[in-house]
Amino acid sequence: MEHYNMNLTLKIWRQPNTQAAGRFETYPVSNISSEMSFLEMIDVLNEQLIKEGNEPVAFDHDCREGICGMCSMYINGRPHGPWQKNTTCQLHMRAYKDGDTITVEPWRANSFPVIKDLMVDRSAFDRIIQAGGYVSVNTGSAVDANAIPIEKDHADSAFAAAACIGCGACVASCKNSSAMLFVSAKVSHLALLPQGSPERKSRALNMVAQMDKEGFGACTNTGACEAVCPKGISIENIARLNREYMTAGLSAER
Amino acid sequence: MASRAAKERCDAGYGVGTTGQAVYLDFKSNLINKYGRAEANKQGIENPDIDTLIRLGKEVVKEEYGNLFDMYEKITGENPYEVPMRIYPAVHYTMGGLWVDYELMTTVKGLYALGEANFSDHGANRLGASALMQGLADGYFVIPYTIGNYLSDEIATKPIPTDHPAFLEAEKHASERISKLMNIRGNQTVESFHKRLGKIMWDKCGMARSEDGLKEAIRDIQGLQNEFWSDVRIPGVVNGMNPELDKAGRVADFLELGELMCRDALDRAESCGGHFREECQTEEGEALRKDDEYAYVAAWEHQSTGGWALHKEVLQFEIAKPSQRSYK
Ligand code: SF4
Ligand code: FES
Image 1 (tube, each protein chain N blue to C red):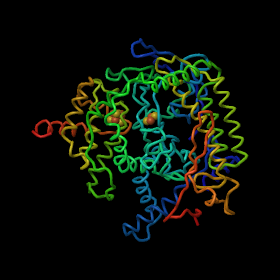
Image 2 (image 1 turned 120 degrees about the vertical axis):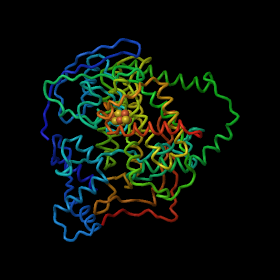
Image 3 (image 1 turned 45 degrees about the vertical axis):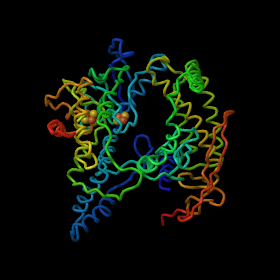
Image 4 (image 1 turned 90 degrees about the vertical axis):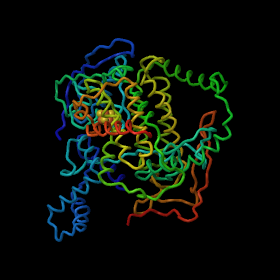
C-alpha cells in the first residue's frame, strides 16, 4: 500500500452535555498519515485542541480492534464510516484523500441521549440484556468438552448472531430508531443453542418488552441496519425473533 | 526468541514498511506445506499440485484464522493470503495481577478478583487464549464454591450507609486526588506522558531486560512521575463528563505500576517465561532459569509510607517440574 499524508477539514458535532444545544465546529488537521486509524486521527486533533487550550472532542472507544462496540460515530452520514462490515476504530485514513471534508456526528436516537460531543448513553441496551436474564447452566465442576452435541449449522448461526458487539449502529441508521437487529441477534444467539433453551420463551418476551419500554421504534423491514452493521448481522435474525416472540406469546407455559 | 530477533533487526535498521517497525511473515510456505498438505491427505488427494495445495491451505486458514486475516487486511489494506504479512512483537500482558488467596479474595476483605485481574493461574508466561481459560475457570468452577463462604457470614449485615467513616475517608481521598490533578494546570497532555511511559517500558522492561536498563528505567519513571504531577494539563471540569481526567487518573496509576514492574524485574535475576534477563541466557540464547533461588511468586505489598514490601510465596512442584524451554 502506498503511503501518503493529507490535510483534512473536520466538521464535528460539539455538545457540552445532554441538556445543552449542540452545533458543528470546523477544525483543520494536517499531515495525517494514510496508515492511521480514524480514531488515531481524532487523537491527533485532540492533542492539538488541548495544546491550544480548548476542550478535546469526547468520544467513546476502548478495544480499537472491532470487538467492544464502543466507537460510535456517524461519519459522512453513515454509522462507522464508508467501509462495509467495519467499525470506526477499524476505519483507516486511506479511505480519504488530501483536501477532504469529513463530517462526524453522534448516534441520533431518542433512546441514546448524547452525553457529550460524540458520546451517547447506550445503557438502554444493557437494560435489554438484563431483562433477558440468566441462562441455566451447571457451575462448580468442569463437564467434558463436547458433552452436548450441537449441529454445525446451528452452531455457526448462533456464532454469527453472537458476533453482535452492541454498538448501536443498527438503531442509529434506522429511520424508526428500531433496536430489532440488536435484540434479534441476542435472542437468536441463545435460542439456537441447547444451553439457552430453559429460558428461551421468557427471554424473548422480556427482552422485547424492555425494548419497547426504552422507546425504540418498530421495525418496518427497511434493512438499513443490516447494511451498516459492522458484524454483518443478518436480518434473518429479525424473522427468527418474530417467530420466537410469537411462539412464546401463544404458549401457556413460559 | 523469534520476537527478540524481530526487534533486533528493526532496531538495526532492517525493518520494512513506512515505520520500519516490522518484519515479513510469509504465510505461503505454511499454506502449501502445512495446511494444504494436511488437508490434501485428509481428502485423499494424491500428488496434489501447487495450486491445489494453495487452494486447500487457504480454505483451512480461512476457517481457523479468517477473522485475524480480515483484521490485518483492514489495518494495512494488504491481503495476507497473497502478500507476506508485516509483523512486529508487542508486549501485551504484565504476567501478573492482584494477589488473591485460594478462594480468589484479594487483601481487601470481601473484594474478589477473577480472571486476568488476578495473578493466580498463568505463571511466568501468559499463554494464548488464557484470558478465556482463566475467566471461565474462575467464574464457573471456583467462585461458585468460594464466595458463599464469605457471604454466609454477611447475611445479617444491613446496608452500609454512605456516612460511614470508612466511606467518608475514601471519598475525601478520591476528591483530594482529583482536585490535586486538576489544579496542576501544566503544559503537557496526559497522552504525551502515557506515550513516554510506554516507550520507557518497551525499551527497558520489554521482551529483554538488563540490570542497567532496569535501573535506568526506574530513574526515568520517577523523573516522569515528578514531571506528571507538576506539569500535566487536564482540560474541562470535575463535575461533568471528562475523559481526560479519567485518563489522567489511570496514567498516574500506570506510572506507579510501571515502576513496580521494573523493580520486580530487577529483583528477579533469572530468566523465566515472559521475563528475559539478558545476563541470564544459555549459549543458544534461551532463557536460563534459576529455580533454586527464584521458585517463588513475588507479591508486592503497597506501603502507606510509599514503596513496596516483597512477600515471597514459595512454589512447590510435586508432579510437573519446571524445566528449561527448548524448541529443538
Ligand atoms: S446488530 Fe450490528 S449494528 Fe446492531 S448493535 Fe449489533 S453489531 Fe451493532
Ligand atoms: S473501539 Fe472497540 S469496537 Fe471500536
